[in-house]
Image 1 (cartoon, rainbow, N blue to C red):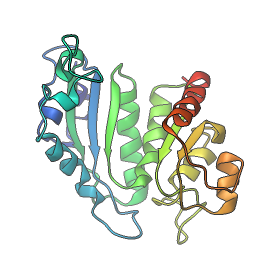
Image 2 (cartoon, helix red, strand yellow; image 1 turned 135 degrees about the vertical axis):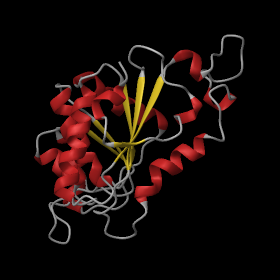
Image 3 (cartoon, rainbow, N blue to C red; image 1 turned 60 degrees about the horizontal axis):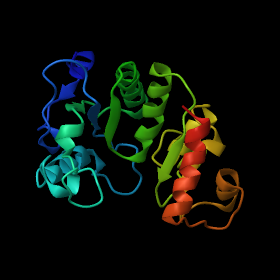
Image 4 (cartoon, one colour; image 1 turned 90 degrees about the horizontal axis):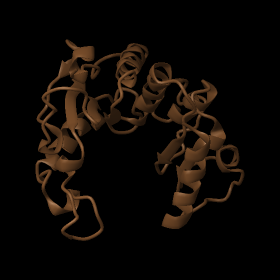
Length: 228
């Protein structure tokens, strides 16, 4: 059954992601949902346009293009992305002008509904605030231990920002404090902007840590081995 049926009436429908059509029947391998929200951004708005911008960028590639094939180099065994998975782009949540508390509910509710399905999920933001309601909804809909790979220049680990607890700068802190993820199961990759106490809590040292590809893969695998 289409993932879109769970969120009927709450979506703005886009072009298909990477031009891969949704399966005619059954659930897709991957579901894509846009979350165009940036009212919790403190510096420069515009992240609400990102889901559509990401989709437009994919129109320059096709599911049969070489960059999207599976394998390190062209070979007879190389298979196109559209041959190895099915994908359904279910559109954007209508949350752009919602106040943070209301957006929190809507985003979390959508993630919870989708998490009950078997599909892998890809969410397109949106400022970093959306991480918190998304993880909250995923945890409710698909219970288990979660790990987080944090690819960001900033830790977003403040208890509040400008007096607001729901902010792009507090999203990881909210996830940890709410018990959605253990701090030891967070891999913060090359964070350059964080308070020393935030670094200590996240990584056990206040020195900026840089990863090689190999060390990053090993650290991510350790988290994967102890989470679900």
